[in-house]
Length: 136
Image (cartoon, rainbow, N blue to C red; front, side, top):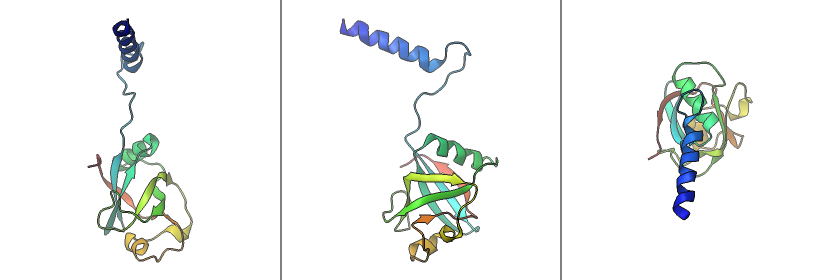
């Protein structure tokens, strides 16, 4: 009986995951995260772990040269995470792409490193997505 229930669950899961009328196969599982590398003012770089599927999709759009909110905006935490080379990272649970942000969180990654920003957030206006990769 347990095997029958397991088989029914598999068939139902396959039916819903595969789509029933369009013939398109859709992924029902989001990637656990991606690491996005940003370059600021064509110089310094920093990396962010993105776990939200909406943020992941927007990062890909920006890498592909498409429009949309493009300012990375996140709360600074004093742990490295994926942001190798720096003593800080942006909290993936408190990250968004913004159209407009306040000036107090704009700057270079080195400004965050030395504590020169007066905000608990980092939102470099000139940042651009230069690479996307899976977390290591």
